[in-house]
Length: 632
Image 1: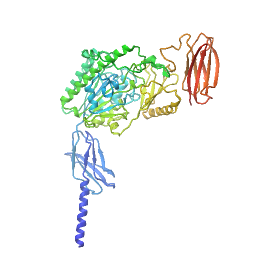
Image 2: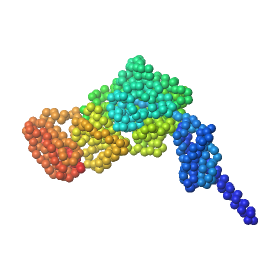
Image 3: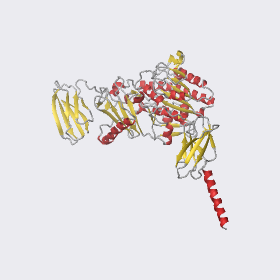
Image 4: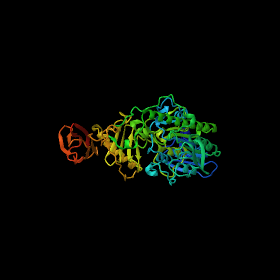
């Protein structure tokens, strides 16, 4: 009886051991070109381990995992068979040999427009007349980031951020001047060093050619669309025709040169729809009968706006001219849509469509009539927001499109995304993140830093922080010039709330946020020039400040700490009365000034409580009032 009981216990123990041994077999998942995830049935002890080797080699590479029974193997070779075994403390033996094969590295195609707004496309609420099924396909068979932004909204700095993954204050391309090639690694040099066949077609925009890292290129950064010269590996070449056609031909030519079994990376950087607004002949008759989209806020700011807006970005045309420009803009963009279709057709014909990471975006946005403004650089949404569409079946099921509305993508994320898909670790730190991590939740970005640097023009250096709810902008003017827009209640940014009392506490938070996010990104560039600009409190274009006989008053800095500079205009009257009253209507300062002797005054309110004050100027029958906000 005892012998029988002992045998039963022995059989049961052996069965448990066998079960534990079987459960410790490796489970393989998330196979990439250079990594794989391995998990197994471990235990709570500290003897979990894993070992692997390339098939056909004798040497195992062993890694101790401690109490962990899930491990990501990295730095593997693409298209390589591996053997793998795992061990847990339950068995203290290696599991049966498993095997897997890493996939080949994906091909990569990045296409971007020049001055292409985020809302051009129907997938982003764009006009119905502009049909772009080829561009939309990338979003509809992948991911559409509804919120995507450049680190700096200007051609050259943005394009440098795309290929480096860095903020402009790190890669040092701060304006549109063409400079010598960067000394830091770009995405091209990193991919080429890892075995990629690399090509660039289009407008590079910030470096003299040739640029390291590309085995094929056809480049032109000039504004000329028709019959121009291009930089090629054999020197400068004159090509007749429209740039959109020549760039598209070159993109297909590059794809024809890819060596067999070599992964490739193509960057196609269109010049369209940038000015001059000269579309291809076949597109120049499009949309003639269609009503053009027109901003509902086609009117000037009239209160608390930076003066440089209308000194530097004033839209000089009328409504008819604005509509005509929009029509030519969309005709140029139709050429980009055609080009994207040709590239996608080529990938389909090559049989590599589903093994290719495809990204479509723009270098920056564009203001065209909103607030009677035009151009980019400034930190309003039309200047900032970009399309960001990504198709890559290994990450995103092409049968179910994904729309991301709760994360912010940026142009500094493009290079890290390319490296993530390729399974390559960047040799230098990058400021951006893989957008795959933003989709999966591994990374989160709910607000971003915007920067712009004065380039000897009238637009000042500025820094801003934008969240989903607010944007705060600090302009480097010679008096305090700030902007704060409530994006929830005023998505068109029609009213600067910087002097509104009810917003002061949240504005102060955003001032601190801006300082913190600049520190996070290592932005140590100090402003060495202050532009002559200020916050205006009267409509531009209605009455000029210095118009003879019209009384106007200027108060700066506003808000401020109580040291107030007042200036007022000459009137026919002999005297101007300046009266300051507090929120309770009590006069705390009153004085008459002779217009023939004095038109300015330094007012000291530092001893008065923080809050809102009204500064009233009277001359004869004329009266003007300005609101002043004092805070520490």
